[in-house]
Image (tube, rainbow, N blue to C red; front, side, top):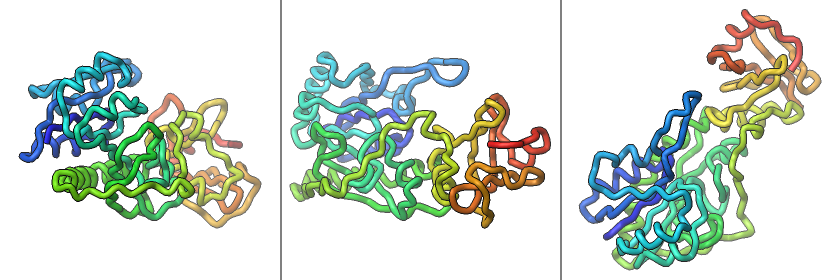
Length: 303
């Protein structure tokens, strides 16, 4: 089956590699985002997807916008049977959706219709969901609204973070896609409409989304800390600087929300219900360290 893969994020790498190795499918091209400056040095880096195939003969397209007429015609000329999309970050115009002979499939990192949108992994952790997964869906012009072909589920672990869960979902995705392509080839692929009444949305995250609201219960804040680790990072303001919090545990203490209850050997802050003992933290401009180590060098009066 002739395949064009469209994606950029690290989560899509195992799926792309599975297509490369597959004897049943022919990877005709990869479409990804342009190279961009990253980090403090602003060094130009290719997307993770490009790094996988940069030394192969597979054609690589890197348009700024998928709706650019030139790239649409280049994809059309490849005559794909299926376009596979994972973690690309743009809404597709109808001109692209109509190119493949069989289907345009998207691999989405949630159990649709729950958590449509750009940040489904973080949303699932922050909400306290017990399971998530990969949904393979037929793409339409909406935001993750297409019919479902199949889903694969995994449990969300008690200590799951926004760094660990994508890696587990990335391993789940290749077989989900290969099973979907097999069903399409056999003519047995289902189309299950989504129940829009059950839909929830996970908007694109911004740095400010990581700011902790101490009026919330400690349980909700602890989930947020895990969900936003490593990005955008949960944080509080201390002395005019951001203190990022990478881990925390719930303690049975009471106080005014935001009140620092302990600040000697451990840093404990009251929430709307219970309190949080901070684990790993990082003050803006400093390295990551334990809260105990942080306290040895900083006097903390309020949050």
